[in-house]
Image 1 (cartoon, one colour):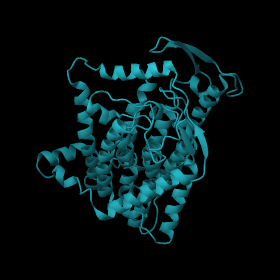
Image 2 (cartoon, helix red, strand yellow):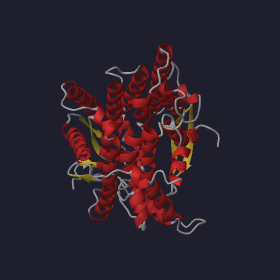
Image 3 (tube, helix red, strand yellow):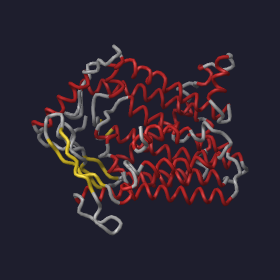
Length: 432
């Protein structure tokens, strides 16, 4: 197990105390309902894999209609869960998944890029990453297009085999998360690890913060190089399916849907090292919650609108599609600009110009779990004067834009992702 990429800074006594306090707080989960710390994770672990196959079934067999139709079919015995969950050992699907994983693992480790030292972890470590996400993103898409152009692969097969692909990845992810728990117990990659004392919670939440094997950072792989990369690859493959069912012509609505997502994912990989300093990476441990989510939930749910549009894209007026493209692109840029303003503000300690003037700020004091009083600067200038967590507003509206090419042809499959994203992010700026 490679630990050379983790800086060997000494563990500060306060950092060690913070780690012990965190582990202790995990075990203090009695609450109002005995066993709730196990029941909740167990429900999510059991229900989430079933739900993704229901989504795929609704798109392919109910034309993206509504979950009530599926529920009625299920209650009437017309559909059984076993009928909608394909075999996870389909040979073609396993080859597709295997080739893609190996390709991205090779790029993650050997694509040229500068070293990036992330923020300090609770145990005092500083993970080091290779900043080659953008190069890997561009190279992946170019490779896909070249393989398709020379008829080496047929990207539309990803649509045809999508249920089997998700079934294969789902089985892999479940086993992978078990492996992460065992590895965390017997061979952790760094001092950022700890058990909750409850095996179910360890499986769900994770044991290690930054697990690495043979130099590969596993969270970077699952979150960025598989989940986010397949989001881009999957939408392009679904666009090929759209061309296949329309005699080689890509519908404009499908183009708008794919173009906006590729712009958004381009923005993500441009900012990838910022993401490696975000709460997803700095706080969420490598368990079912984040690793299964990025390996299975992201490829299925985040592409569900494109999956639907592949065969059900309505022919909207050209002007309307172009307006959606223009508005969506603008919203993605505003989202990027808001994040950039915050990054510049933090890096300069508030001594910067935003929109031509020194921004207003709030100096917030807070007390850590160890009794330390610290200060944090909060930006209230530029876009951040509009709303708390402003960046989510254009991000959610941008997601709505790449769903709008479906218009009113269906209201579940095309709009499930934006509804899901609004629910997890909307509470940050809408009154509770």
